[in-house]
Length: 158
Image 1 (cartoon, rainbow, N blue to C red):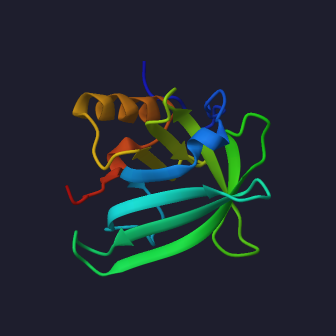
Image 2 (cartoon, rainbow, N blue to C red):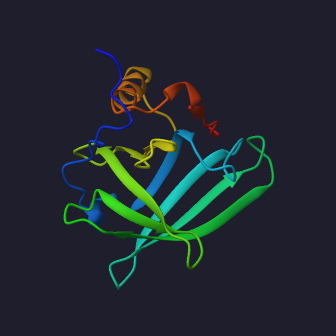
Image 3 (cartoon, one colour):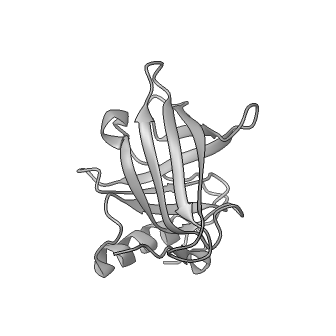
């Protein structure tokens, strides 16, 4: 069977426990925003706010492992009862779709994308993951209609 059509509804995670989802995530690979292209050591730290929204702090180094550091903050909130469909806001009034495609039962890895299948992030709690697991996660994304040939593997300091 081939990859699913991008016209079919996107299969999302069954449920996302936001209290388990918060914390540090390392970006393993991505089809990201133009602002992220070429970044190394990319991380997202998710911090629960008292109002139930999540404060997201992105940090990375530009162009190479020891390049100039950059960071920015965003706000994330759920717009679905299962928390798999969210909105992320870099600056007011802009807000973009953020969907959790899949998450490990132990919250060790997650797949995040956009409904249009034009952006994708494979993230983990550690800066590297087993190659067999990575291949499986990439295949899961491909089966959901993402063009995984566009994935940029993120370099991290070991």
